Image (spheres, rainbow, N blue to C red):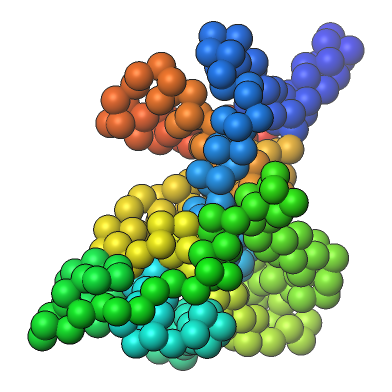
Length: 333
């Protein structure tokens, strides 16, 4: 009996650790065997390119998740970054370098405001970032008067946009390194490596995780909990702004609908990451795997001609199932 229990325990641990990756590999083989075009390099790179923006945002929101918080404003920050990038270059005819710096600083400032509302004003993170989400959504429409921004567009007050996106700016979203790897994918990989290094290989990362596990205990051993919480939201806002820059470079215009489902896809990717390797906590590797999984799933469902509302249902079902399996099985006796 004890041997059977031991075997069952080993199987359970194996399922928790590798179950999600096995399911992901199974779907990859299924889609590829039914639709051979799925395995073509062009389609695989298309999947990676499709997940870059919300993958970058998911890496940013990993910081608040690590400290047991959540940032609901990341999608709006990315959308605002798209509009500000377009307005500065196309309407105000400002250089791409200054635009990038300005947008990143703007994202950091929004993250800092979120952090101050949570740390100093004591507003719960969900409420603070939800309020910021609505505020930023409104702010996104003000510069252009609610119109999309592109070369030749006529904005509020009869202003005509006469500038254009800088070529090197567009390269961030449309270019390819060595003629093969999309630049946007390379940026996502670089951000993932940086987030991994900070959270997994530095003292800062250990403190972030300690705060997420028990903030009061971390405070008692000398950690500057409020400072680290501020840092988490600043990082989230800055990385969300970077995601918006990549999106602006990809679409080449300031689209008022650019936010789309970025928030849900980003948070979904980060939460799916809890199930990867059974870590049951936010982590950059799991976040990227989660983003790729969502992209692969949607790509396969599209090939199967599944309507968009069915895709959303399947995506939500996968997220719930992955989390229920990871947390439920790990706590079962």
